Image (cartoon, rainbow, N blue to C red; front, side, top):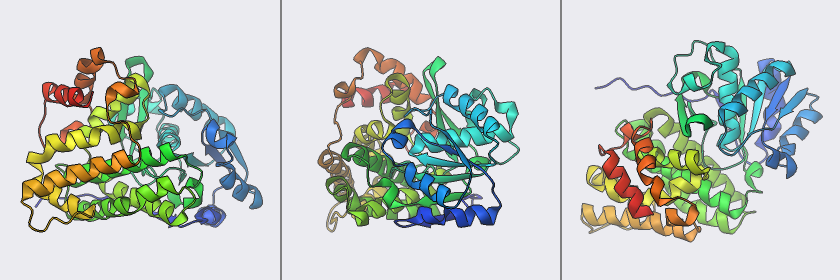
Amino acid sequence: MAIQRIVLNEVSYFGPGARTVIPTEVARKGFKKALVVTDKELMKFGVAQKVIDVLVDAKIPYEIYDEIKPNPTVKNVKDGVAAFAKSGADFMIAIGGGSSMDTAKAIGIITNNPEFSDVVSLEGVADTKKASVPIIAVPTTAGTAAEVTINYVITDEASKKKMVCVDPNDIPCLAIVDAEMMSSMPKGLTASTGMDALTHAIEGYITKGAWTISDMFELKAIELIAKHLKKAVEEPNNLEARDGMAVAQYVAGMGFSNVGLGVVHGMAHPLGAFYDIPHGVANALLLPYVMEYNMPAAITKYRDIAVAMGVDVAGLSDEDAAKAAVKVVKELAIAVNIPQKLSTIGVKEEDLQALAASAFNDVCTPGNPRDTSVEEILAIYKSAF
């Protein structure tokens, strides 16, 4: 038996209105001043304000850093490190999707491990010695699960590369999974982040590192997403569906953060780095194509995926059950209006070879259940083109 490790964050609160516990936790931990890490859109539309109001009411001092891009860059991180130092804060509140939380993780790690201040040396598994500055993570999308993972992704614009950083020292000390923070997500973002969560759950379930505890998390996440995603997209104010997706993406994160992912993520990261395509859209589009490719290596697990997605597989062979799993995933993507071809979202055919080379070298790719090659990844890109 191999030795297995699982890393989860210390404390999480769930449910509509959960943000109201922040002052209690801040007092319990003895924190003095917050740097709120978010983006201009969330400030403009009053989403971040829902948390800021809680800080104001509790008389907790704060400053704001909101210079974060959808695919956060090395510059965003360096500017954030400077903003944190200048603010005199002793903790951060990251409000947003993966972008805000990932940036806060990098800021927190570099602040306490300044030898990594170039940012690019954090790629892969960084040997940091000290835990991040404390982070309270408040997700506003139901997708990345960055509030419970040991991963973060930063774009190195100079080399057109998404750097996946893996570090148990970066995990937020507190997660606030509040469906009311997600209620203003537009339909397209609800769909793409929800399909991102489904990609995490499916890849985490079939990855080479999967084991008993991660399997438990991922299957439950798949089941919850199948139940709640379509309704969350179609009925934006349905708090039950929002909360179901909020919990689902968190549960998926508890699994994949500890066991890794696969080629869907390996192929999605270059699309974000080359074209700034939103990560959830890239994952959602690629997922059925990669599932077809991976089928021979994970056929019995595909039966479990089909069942978790609500398919009756009684009487079906493993192969037919596996095909049903791919079909139901594709049907869900179509139902929530995910683009089906790379050519429709700005990808250029002449870039496919370079994308394939980048995907092959991505840190997520070795976790794929089926060993792959640049040529095979290129073939998947072509089928999705």
